[in-house]
Image (cartoon, rainbow, N blue to C red):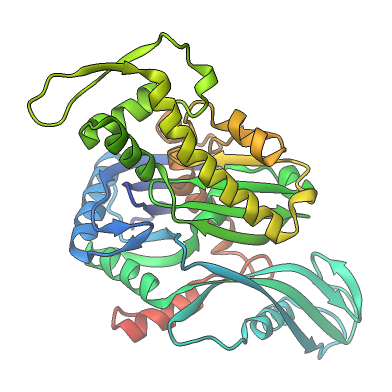
Length: 404
């Protein structure tokens, strides 16, 4: 890039690809360009056609570059899908100097990373939950503390190696270098959750096109992740089948007239539904549309609720549940979710950045904005705050023959 301090984020989703370019300034990040393209070649968050995905990435890149008047060479990207798993790991080291130094934190995190993995898995993140110095537990920042033994309890977030490989490949074919691959829900959390919510306990639900991703934060740290292969695209499919209408019409009906609580619709309210083939459009009850959406959304919410209960953390979610992502604005979703979760629910918008703030202040862009914030906050920071994924990614790209 030029001498300007630029960052670029690439959100490769199932239904859309978004590229956002921002500049680091003293007062914070300023958005310079936004590029959007329809996603092709992806299913439920995973690349299934590298060429098609690469074309969409190239289109989004060109649009962002045209707005920013800058050439993009390097991006931070996100990944999601049911192949993502997390588990808790412990690391322990002896302190050589009698006090904790930054390099000791790096060593203990590497010790926590040293777990047995099958050949088709790769670790995305090692996220410290708490440290212990000489058995004094509950420490969040151990640097400078005296002792002879340092331990860490960390959450390992791992992914399918082939899923990461294919994502990096299609981005590389679009002429871009990947500087980091970040869990999408972790990125979205950077954009929509407050530190207070993370401290008190909150569940983030990233309701996307192909998947719905869950991330639970308690005492400021990520404690649990899960992914459900149900997203807004499946709602569109249900409408297409249930109302016997073209998919494009079903998507428009979902966005303009969709509601997932039938009691929010008057009994006599109707809407015009295009027919398949050459048949004329029909007038149908809007309540039927609501019932179709309610059935699928209830199924999704019950799966998410089961995951929350399985995590053992639901009772600790004092801040409730925050929905974000492209499907989070479905009318009636917060009310229905509150009934099922029995917790307060809100819709999360990404924090406002300067520059093209209105273009990115939408739940569908939470991941892209979060990737920018994540890169700005962590990727040039000391490893004790959150180790850069660049180390494993460099090794991974050398294996793929993509450079290092």
